[in-house]
Amino acid sequence: KGSGPPEGWISLKVSGKDLLQPAEPPAEEKPAFLEQELPEHVRGAVPESKPFAFPKGKCFGKDGKMKMLYLHGGGVSKTLAQMQINNTFKDVPDKKQLEWTIWTGPHSVPLGWNGDFSLKPFGPNFTVYFERLPYANCQWETWEGFEKTLADFKVFLKENGPFDGVMGFDMGGEFLVHVAGLAADGDTELKEAFRFMILFTTTAPKHLSPMGKQRIKSPLCIPTVCSWAYSDENHPFMEYEELPLFIHKDFREVIVHADGHRPPSFKKEQSVFQRFVRFLDCMQKGLPFTPSDHERSEERANLWLPLLRAPARSLADKAELRLIVACDPMGAGSDLVKRLEVLQALKSKGELPEVEGKPWVTSGMPPRPVERLQLQIDICNASHEVFAAAAGQGVCIQSVPYSDEQRQVNWHCKSEEVPSRQLVAKDIIESEGHDALVRSWAKEFLASFDQKEGEEVALVG
Image (cartoon, rainbow, N blue to C red; front, side, top):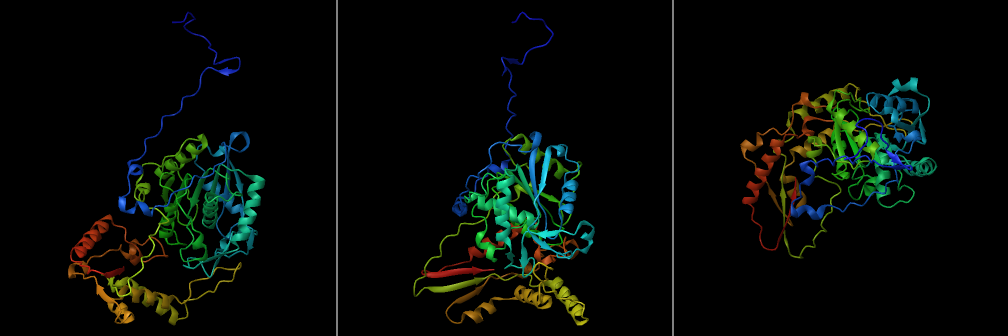
C-alpha cells in the first residue's frame, strides 16, 4: 500500500511517457453463422480471397476526421449529391467527424438523361460515370465511357487520396465495386486508396455483358455495407441481392431499407440505423469489423460469387446421351397472361411507346415489350417436347414428372404483394418453406432415377 493522501491529483505521465494506456475493447463475439462450415462437396467451388491493400492509418481528414468520398447516381449534379449525403447522415451522431468529397462523373449529360426532369432546380451540370447501352437492365448492357472514368479516377486518387471510406449510389457504387476488384487484383494505381465501402442500390456487371468478363474474381475482404430497397423502381432487387455475394461474408453488412431508388433516410429509431452507426463507429475507431448478428447477413452467409466451376468432361464417342427437363410445374399462370393483355390493349391504342436511347442524351427502353412478354410466357409453358424436337434421334429426352398435387402448389407471392414495377409475381419465390419442399421433390425424383453404365446425363430447368 502507498503512503499518499486518500484524495488528490495523480500524474498520468512521467517525463512525457504515459503511465496509463486505454484498454483494448473486448473482441465482439462472432455471430454463429460466420462459424458455419460449407459442406465438403462444395468447398472446392469457393475461390480463395486475396488480402485487400488498405492504406496505413485512419482518419485521414483534417483534425482527425474520417475522409469520405461520394460517387452519385447517373444524371444528377454535385448539388443533389450533397443533399443525398445530408439526408442519409442527418441523424448520425458523429456526422461532423466526416469530411466529404464528391467526385462527379466525367461525362456530361443533359437534364432528363435519366427520365427525371424534376431535377432542373439542381442543375445545370448533370454527369454520369458511364452510359448504359443499349438500355438499363439489358443482360448484355455495355458500360460506354467506363475506361475514361477509370483513368480520370486514378489521377484523382493520386492527387487527393487516400480516403477512409468510399460511398456510392447506383452507378457510382457499381464503379467503386469494380475499382475495389481491380485493387484486389493488384492494380498499383488503386491499392491503398480506401479502407471501407458503403454501397447503396448497387449491382454487379451483368454476367452476359462485356464487363461480365471483368467481374470480381474472388470475394473481397474489405468492410462493406450493401444496402437497397425491395421497392426499388429502377432495377429488380434480385440484382442488389447478388452484389453482397462478391464481398466475403466476414466483411459484409447487409441492410435493407424502405426508401426506394435513392440513398436511404436512416432514422435513429430504426434498427437499420443502429447497424449503420455501429459500422461507422467501428471504422472510425479502426477496430476489426464483425458483421452484426442479423438475419439479412445470416440468410446469405453460405452463398458467394463467383463460383469455381469444374472443367467440362470429355464425352466418349459412343456414349448414350440423356437430357432431363424440369419444366415449370405452374406454367405461365394467369398473371403474365393478364399483363400481356394489358400491353396488347395499350399497343393497339398507340399508348405503348418504345423509346430508343440516344447515348449521352437520353436512356432507352427495352424494345418490343409485347413480344418479350410473349416469349417469357412461351418459356414458362414449354415442355420437354420442345427439346425433343430440337434434339432429334441423338439424345433421349426425359421430363421430370409432376403429380396433380405438385402442379397445384403456388410458388409465388400475390400480385398485390409485388414490391416494384420492375417485377411480376412470377419473378419472386421467397418462402423458406418452398426451399424445403423442392428439396423433398428432388429427393423423390432421384430415388426413381437410374443411370445406365456409360450413359451421359444433363439436366435443364
